Image 1: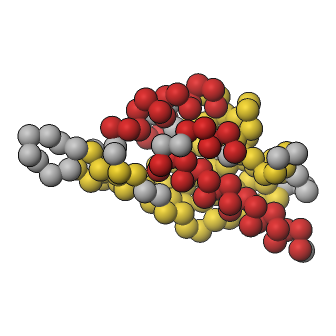
Image 2: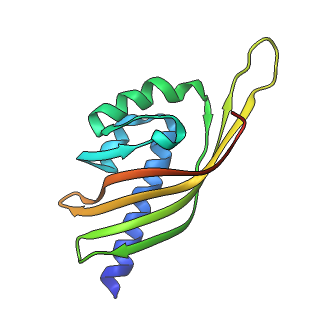
Length: 141
């Protein structure tokens, strides 16, 4: 029981590291979130699918068009598949701003959905080896 509590805190820390890396543009921090061979699927929101080495530069090139990004995570469900594997679902709300130019106010763009991860325990701690972003709703696009 104590190990499950420790694992839950460790996995939640990784989820927070993920949202902070995305929101702050600290793309190299994603190395502390994913395994090197992780598969990441952002196709539901108009993004790409690929391994970490492909997705990281894509994020660095495309997300800065939204100068303000903020994630909130909710309802984190962790289901263990043995001592070293876990399926994780985390609801998210992700508002961002998109400058309009010509003196127009920034457009607020929002996504709501569920991050579906498959986590594995590594020598460096828990890491996501698969992320599928499910979009439940969006506004502003």
